[in-house]
Length: 67
Image 1: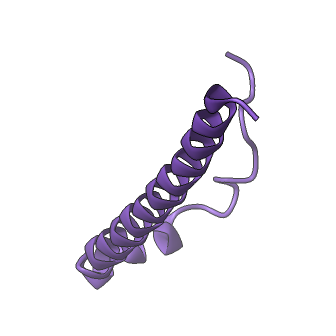
Image 2: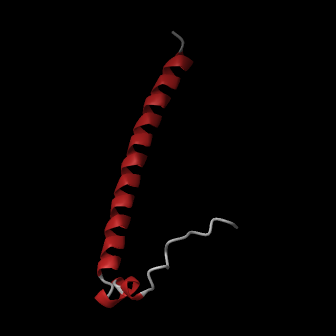
Image 3: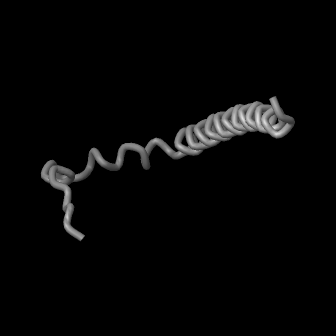
């Protein structure tokens, strides 16, 4: 076994550890964003949340998919 092979193995294990840490940081950031979004939606007045009940029944039935 040569020295360059041993260093590449340690680099791969270090990279895997870095990837694991990066994934955990990303998960935590997504949790915080979801919590902030829920807080923002919950802070809306009740009247704003229920405005769709005042719309005509035919609205929202079709989606325009052409650009």
